[in-house]
Length: 156
Image 1 (tube, rainbow, N blue to C red):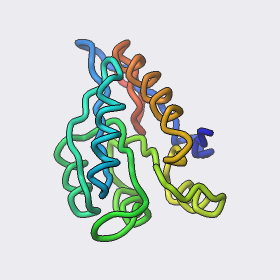
Image 2: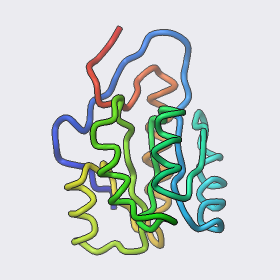
Image 3: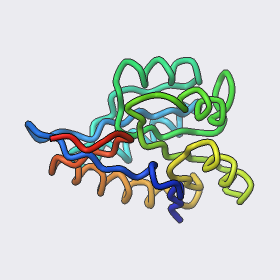
């Protein structure tokens, strides 16, 4: 099931001018096997480009600053901390990427905690990866049409 963060400012779509653009995705996952599976799954989505991968909070923050992804897929357990630490670290980043948390811990408490810290979506890794792909397919189609997920004012 997909959970959208209920705050109004979390779902602003931005219409951009210029050439068709890809949906840029950062995959943050400490498990090599799961990360490779996610990359394979998401690489099949038209108009989506995985710009980087990270295994730690520190690397993820650096990659977000370097690549300005539209979407970050975020595991809750990382090499040097947790996904919650990353959610806290990116709180003030502009433009803010859409953050989709992936976890094997799909309990309501984990979901609520992630959403309270600014996650936009929460997926149970064992049950909902197809839901993640469906979400990103829609966002990638919107990006191709010039509509971007970003937490800033409409331009153009």
